[in-house]
Length: 341
Figure 1 (cartoon, rainbow, N blue to C red):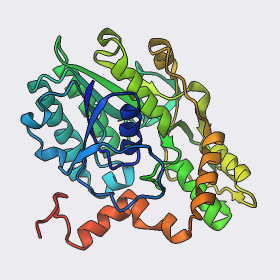
Figure 2 (figure 1 turned 45 degrees about the horizontal axis):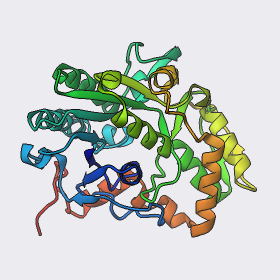
Figure 3 (figure 1 turned 60 degrees about the horizontal axis):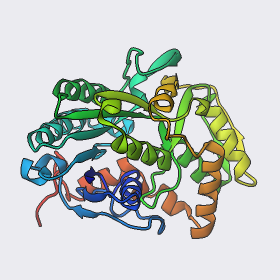
Figure 4 (figure 1 turned 60 degrees about the vertical axis):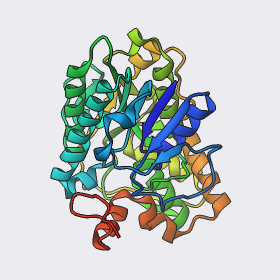
C-alpha cells in the first residue's frame, strides 16, 4: 500500500512511518519541520522520505497515486490551543478538512485521522464511541468538528477512519515531555521527585505510542467494510488510570523518587474509556504496553543517554516552548508559516 503520513517528524509520526515501512508499505512523509530540533536518541530502523511542506500548502497533485493518508500533523496539545485558539481552528479543523477533500478528489480511498479521547472531556462513568462528546478545549473541539465533516465526505470511494487515541506515552526519538507519563518520568529522573499540585484524582486512559502505531497499521490492513467511517477508541480498557496512579507507578520505577500530592485541581478533564470496540472489530490488535512497562522503557532510555535537566525542560521536546521560540525569533509568522530568508 502507498501511504502518505503527515507529521513524520513528530513524536508519533516517526514511529508510525518506521512501523509501516517495516511492514512492507511504501511510505512518504509530509512535515513542515517545527520540531526537527527535538531528536533525543537513535531509536528507529528507518525514516520515511519526507516532503518539507505545510499541510495547508499541499495540492491534489501531491496526493495523487496514494492508497491511504494517515493524518496526524496538527497543533498538538491543549496548552498550545489555549494560547492560539483561532490558529488552532484554522490548522486543526480547516486544514485537516481541506486535506481530506484533496485526498478524496485525488482518489485516495483510505483516510486515517488521529483524533483523541479528549473529545469526551469531563464525563461521568465509562464512555465509549457512542457516548456524547464534551470537548473542553479548542484542541478537542477541533477533533469533534473534523470527525463530523469527514464523516460527511464518506462514500463508496472514500473511507475515513477516526482513531480516538488515549493519552500517549513512551519513548520516541522525537520525544515529547509535555504529556503526562513522559513528563512525570522526566521529573523523576532529573529531580528525583514528583510534586503534584492536584490530588491526582482525575481519570486518564493511557496508550503507548507503539500501540497507537500498531492500531494504525491494523486499520490500514483491515477490510474496508470493517473500518469505513468508523470511530475507534485506541487503547485498552485495563489501562484507565487516575493521574495519582500514574505518578505512583513512575515513582516506583525510578529509584529514590519521592511523590507528593496537593489538593488544588485546576484541570477538570476526567474520563474513563471503554476500548472494547477496537478489541472486537480488530481482533489482531492488542496493546503490548502498560504504564509500568512504559515507565521502565523511559528509565532505560534516560539511563542510556544520560538525560540532563536542560534537555528535559528545553524547547526541543515541549511543543509550546518550541513554537514560542519560532515566533519570538521571527522564523514563522503569526499564521505559523515559515518566513522566507
